[in-house]
Image (cartoon, rainbow, N blue to C red; front, side, top):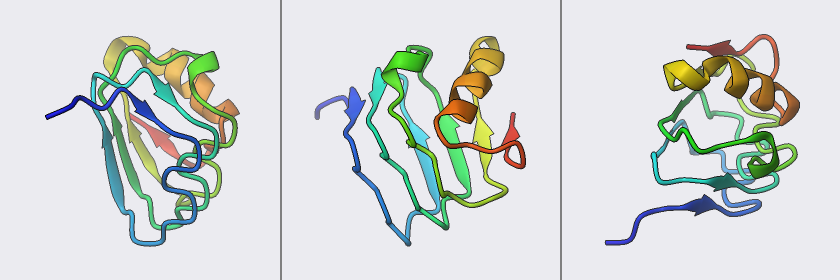
Amino acid sequence: VYPVTEISAKAFKNNKTLKKVVIPSTVTKIGKAAFQNCKNLKKITIKTKKLKQKTVGAKAFKGIYARAVFKLPKKQRKMYKKVLLKKGATQKMRFK
């Protein structure tokens, strides 16, 4: 068993079957276009508290479901929302 520490660039790009994702607390980096154009990705749960603007790649969440829901850690919610909006999320998406 190995902990996931990074989601590489284009890891799930254009994946049409992906509907929800849980990013564990061990992840420190999300690569460029990691979930780009995953049209059915509706629910993203981020458990890690280690992400920063520099560790989330450009267009990481661009082109996902228009009304997707991000579930974020409480203490990082405001900062994560700001980062995710710069990395492809839109204002129509919900951030809980």
